[in-house]
Image (cartoon, rainbow, N blue to C red; front, side, top):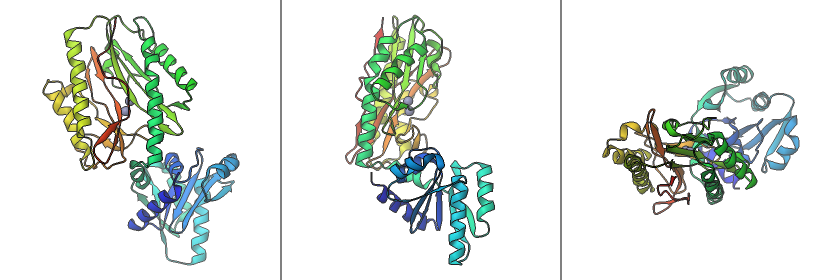
Length: 365
Ligand code: ZN
Ligand code: ZN
């Protein structure tokens, strides 16, 4: 893993934003920059390099995982240890007050106050934009391989879920089959609580598997993902149980068409808002756009939801190496819902759909 290159890119951002030092507190960002996979740690970055702070529980893990950096293990909470260390160093240099950036989206009000108490007046605190998240949008070749492996593992589980889908089976039973198979296949964990939503519950975009049995007729939405070597997968397939009507078939095909229209837009240089628009436009032609109530997709990587957001009006421009999901859906409250989701990597020429699973209409009689 090229932690050095990532750190160098972050350091360039720090000077661009006129930050003397930067505290990285969000665990996935720390992992991205130095390899540490534990939960308690702070990475302090400045123009000269970085120091990783953790506590006694992580001594051996930090020494093993943290790549080529200074590791400081303290009795204090890592955040305050980092802050004291900074203040001591700065005082020795006897310079004017420095600017200390922190990840505003990942710090509690209490931690921020404690931090200010330690560093003021030697440093001025500044809320930094999501600098590391922006770097993480572009995946290197190794990350793309990792995500591809997670996506393939995830996809290999779908048939297991499918075999369990039948009237009378509880949604949680389907999820259990899927999650058990995931662990046996080597997944670290699921990347989010598995969604199995059947019948009228399929109209809930985030219908976590419940104890409800699958009804005799209707759609079943299965949305799930695994974590493999730290990277997440995410896929959705929707199948029909029972004797399907023409209307069910039409709604399924409309979503599939919308998903394909969005995928067809994915290429370097296009704004993510355009990808979203393509899906909505296709649904609008069938009068279904008002039932598409969420965004078209999201970045995926060390976290299940990361930048960019593929949503209406978003101006982030796709670049080769970005990985996003494309997952339009149609939800008719009280009746049914359909969603289809793939993971897509932006390539130099266009894109590659990583999810290998068929999107043909499946009816389970
Ligand atoms: Zn999903
Ligand atoms: Zn998703």
